[in-house]
Image (cartoon, rainbow, N blue to C red; front, side, top):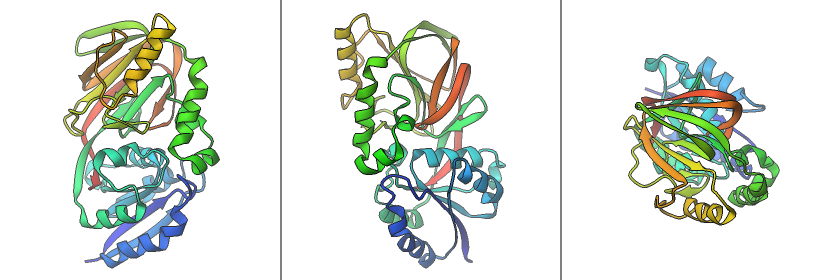
Length: 298
């Protein structure tokens, strides 16, 4: 019996190479018995709206784009009944591709397409951020706006280097946010320059920033909080640790723990990012782990 696949793609994601390989990708799917419906996105939320309206009619939703495109897809799918939520076939064509690297999806979209048709569904936890969702990271503070502050044209030309250069440019503007953080009857309060709630082995192109003992469907998030350093020397030491291949927590300014639900509260509204995209300005957010919420073909 022929299976139905919805293929959503962002034509300007990454270095905009998807258009070159589109026919080849569709051929891979067709030869494996999929009837493919193709929808290129043309503006923000286009993919979200199309998936929300049509995804329940397909056996698989294939998403070609960056982590932001994956986030759009997930937010739409999470509004569907769990029994009508098709698995995601993710073809990474972004500049950083944190999620694909974590679950072992090839970063060449043609190889990813071949893997999808030979693969099977793997169920991952999702994050709920108040009323929105994220696939692998919710973050605030230093450098977390880099993904959406970096111009798409710059990312297309320079790829991951574009993020690094933008991060360096933002160094002088680092500021702390006073927050109260509650989890599992524990309360942490202080001035933080960075916070990340993650379910990934890679964040911002850097592997193992949170650690290596990570399961994507254990019902728990890995949380990293970085306090305001007392001086410039401490800031340099902290940054060195954060970009190290394996984060070793031997710095008093760095806090790490696991939790399934975390409440963040602050006096002022703070901008957050969800999967590298702007997630809104909030002064109170509850982040919950939705256990085994969605399936991805691996």
